[in-house]
Length: 301
Image (cartoon, rainbow, N blue to C red):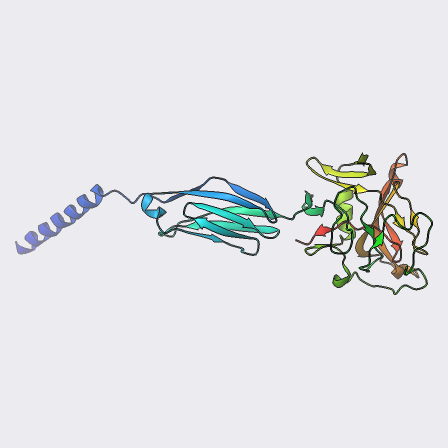
């Protein structure tokens, strides 16, 4: 009889506990909501980010963080934060509540002076003096010999006038690669490869006049870049040639092959003014390393 009595008490106690558990409401889930779904900034820009957190108890003592502080950092003021874009790349801007709930917004930082085409950031303008872009897309910038960080004027001396100190066919030193220290592109940028030029050639393009300069427009609006037909400086004496009708741009790629003398040549992007046959309009050609060509950089990201 005692055993029955004890069993009855246990059953009653468990029933009471179950009743209390059933009456208790489960904790309210934590919900984190941002005012935007994603951020896109240019290097040097800032953006406002706001967060709403429920329930109210989880909105106390929450924290902000950036997954890549080299790309973006945060100045936070409670529910409001300022995202500072430093360099090209992506960073997850994250909020973490006291109960461990996390949610993030991806911040994408794109390079200044760039256009995004086919998965790559192209510079909007040519290289002028080493380490600096020309002010405008239509500006010719300066000419460079392959693997040399010396810029030559695109205007003076004029056509058919030789220039002093030109590294000509007889005086140049053969280069087997475009050395990093000789790349005239600004920091974070580089001379494109031949394959990267081919990728740009596969995009939409047309011959046009842009702010008084002739050349080709590549890409689809609004992601378009203008490549001016700045001509070149000839390999023997540095005289200007083809200004306004031809464009010659270095790649960092060598010309491969066993033909004698091929080691003196590198791949260059080239186009010229219409009307011409379609297969003679644009190509990736071999150019002697002493020719002076334009440089349009691609972002090294």
